[in-house]
Amino acid sequence: MFAVLTFFIGLGAVGIWYFSNIESASRKNLSEAISIVTPVKSTFENPCDGPRPSNREIEAEEAVYLAECFIIQNGYTDLPPIDDKSKLTPENLFPGTDEEGMKMRRDSLERIAYSYERDNELYGGRWIVMFRYKPHPEVVRFYGDSFDHIGRAVIIDFYGKRLRVQHSDYLLKSSETILINR
Image: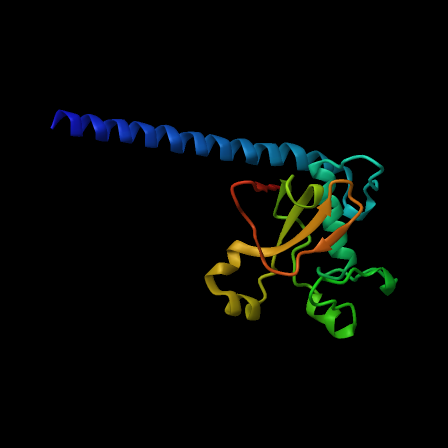
């Protein structure tokens, strides 16, 4: 009986330690996101006004602003896309830069990025910046409860040169994701 009681007390202590470390790590990630993104937000009201990357790896806040500018210029927000239609970036599976495709993109995403992560493994490294869907009633009806957990992702190489929208839905939060709080 003593051994069983000791086992459960030990198990409880490990659980408390484990969850308190996860909570502090989450707070740390959130505070890092706030400290990284907030100063840049006050510098550029429009994300497209920021400096363009040179021949160096970009930082997280630069990746976020490049992604925000990218979705604005490519017609995913409530703002008009760029005037030069030849500069629109097609998606992988559904190019969608014709009139019908642009109607489908229009106002589908929030302008402000929700979260981001750094992926060092695929394609020589990349930033993944996630955007929440706009809560249009027909989209909410289609997705139901999962609507709060998915969005679209802008994939950016570490030098900020190649940007694209991931063709499939993307989880807004994962163990590697840093939430942006602005």
